[in-house]
Length: 403
Length: 81
Image (tube, rainbow over all chains, first blue to last red; front, side, top):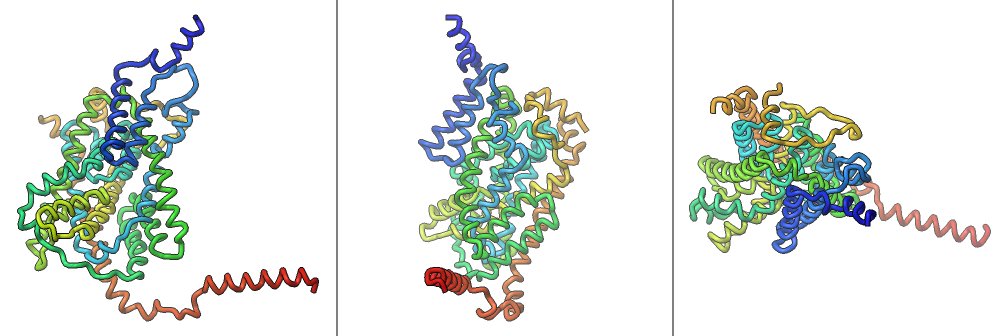
């Protein structure tokens, strides 16, 4: 009997608390959203199950099991997130599957990808106004880029203590693109504007497709070297694809490799979410600011497209501005859907891909600028890592007082 | 309210936001300009970039040569010559 009681004390039931139980329920909700409603299942399934496993209580004097316990397998999987390894690998895969031809064919649409990044910097001010420390504010603001890997990369470098909240917010809002964006797009455009047809794009030569990643990596990385891990890998992946001489490598990058890294990234983010630092008022603020960032980015893209039209002879459909957030290809699909609601003969998808992929580059540049100006958090050896600090209102208040 | 506004000013939030927006636009405008001139540049440099097929390594030909060499090697081994 004593043995049974001793065993019971080692089970998750014995040390289960309210916070762990709530986090497990949130993990189950994520699984429901992914499996039943098909919201970003490739990400939400690993994140959801990771969240459940990360919040199963276990005895502190037992074997190393959690992501904070040096020696546990979850700890080592989590290092890929913490050290910023997974996001550049995801970018390599994205590069190997992205067709930049729509952007090369219509370079003026790149500016819509820049305009959507205004949301990031507006949210930076909003986050500072709500009392966040500058590095945390930058990490929260990047949610407006609607780019999960970029958000994880920047927050792992600048504010690892809120990385899980930022990652969950970024991926949640990416999955909610079809719900968040259409009302803003309809609010800011007239039915006539939504009916504007775009002329077919010109054909892009193979040479242009090959030269583009080389020229683009030189321009972006020379101006903002801090973008090197993300954009360097993005354009490497794209060069593997477009050069036509490394088809095997491109195939691996866009299929097997990106799938493996997606599993590890999603799971690591999920397993690192702990009730004590996730269920705080600060997290609520982060989610509130995140959705604000996303809405602002969409609005800025649409409004800039309307402003841009004042100077153009051949008008662009202002809905394309909403695709400037870098949720590829969800926001381009939303543009197509909203455009077709106004006019069933309006096909905007391929045109929307231009600002959409420009948004990926733009959000990586924005992250690079923030990283270059503010600098990253001090780098520590993995084995010396202290447990993730608890983010409380008090901690945030004291953080703002630090130089 | 003043303290919150202080958090923005003491961290140079407005300056950082303005500089960030300008830099993102500057880099993407540069990329856009580069793409715009690319077709003209390629039209000008096209003849220089064109190479005759004979200059390029032919993977198929190399594979055929390797197969012939392997067959010859096997034949010579078998016949003992």
